[in-house]
Length: 255
Image (tube, rainbow, N blue to C red; front, side):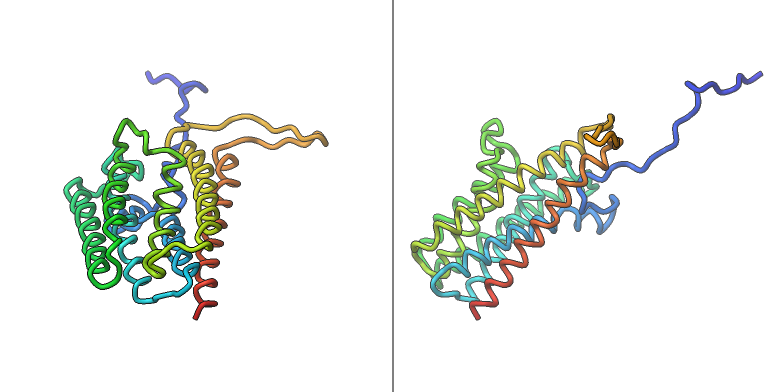
């Protein structure tokens, strides 16, 4: 004879698994490749390329297009593929062999554009190429015991580096106007890192958030993972949109 279910034996309702990022789609197929691009963040950091060119005394639009393509391949494709190889933070089902091919192909494409730029534009580009080819795997795969996988290196690699590269490609020198731009993208990148680290921890490592907020007027609010994520993710969305819109507007103003 079957025993009746007690409260402790009652099965809990199933809930949908938490997405590893607010922009992540359901796992499988083409959706994994969309998720891999980290599109809001990739566009955010490509905006630093646009700002770098726009801050330069002269905007060379052909060179800007090539620089955007190089950073999309090196950062948006290669670095993110390497990051997914290191622990599957986005929980995609993309085979390791495909991720490795994307990483190698992305870096090779970025290098090819850099070499072409060295021949056609400025002979100083190899210094930028070498740093880019080094920092993409060093940061994403956490070389040197993760010493380069830090807040400041994130800001330097994905904020300051694309800004300075685009500025140099257009101007072939660094002028006085480069410093305020460096400070701005450094601060924006550090703000992104501060917000996104807490969001990632909650989405990927926290099982639940429990408790109650009691306000001065006596009202209360229940704490949950949704509550813990809401403010930071809203700020990340707004900062991404702001940076993209700002870069677009500044570039249009230079036309």
